[in-house]
Image (cartoon, rainbow, N blue to C red; front, side, top):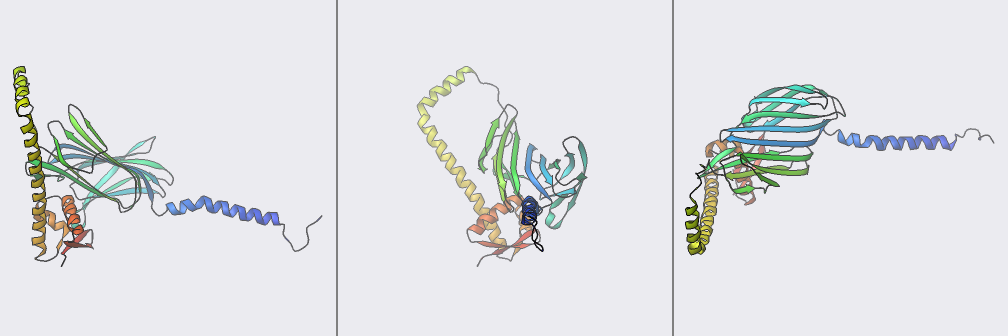
Length: 316
């Protein structure tokens, strides 16, 4: 029977609506993904301590592009020297042109220009350079400090610190590492975090001693003597060790209070930029950030965003 005049078959209209819904569901995730030009699947930072003034840093970034991507920029508060980078496209490896420029507040911007990564294509950026300033003196020991903040989501963040033979790890270690591995020529500490959100920030602090001179193996008779003495004064030795650890903790707290008192004294003269405090105190910018965050939580100060840094005020 023929369809009535002036009426369209319902089957065709339903098919058009169904096709529209399917296309909407397919392209909806892509619309959300376009909030950023690329997706960071993994971000890894490797530090190898050669000496207090010589640290090899390597950054590896796995990205999937949503646009025609030809440049990536990294910002750091530390010096960047002898920088080199490559782009791994899976089947080929291309050299990356690296340019370092200083921007507001003494921050270094590392511009990496490379062959085009097309929409939907994945690649790995590998940047290596020499830096310093992450290790500061703290009494008789040294302290490694590193701070990182992400401006967009990251699938997996991986951080690794290599300390050479002859150094001993001491407290504090913040946060606790996910893996510690010791060998004859190095000590490795490793951290791993997943599902990083925009604005997430991480502080890493590791204390370690200066270089240790390894003595020659003593005579077996010395072991016998030590064993006998240990039996006689073992209890006193344990008690003395506890007192020593308590004294070291008090020294660390006194040092922190000393830094806080210096900052409070400066702020009584008027507000000051956070980037200037590091120079006045003689410590790294990352350590200043940690101290100011703790003082802000105590209600001692307030910080107001000003450019790429903060202006610090004494709270009344």
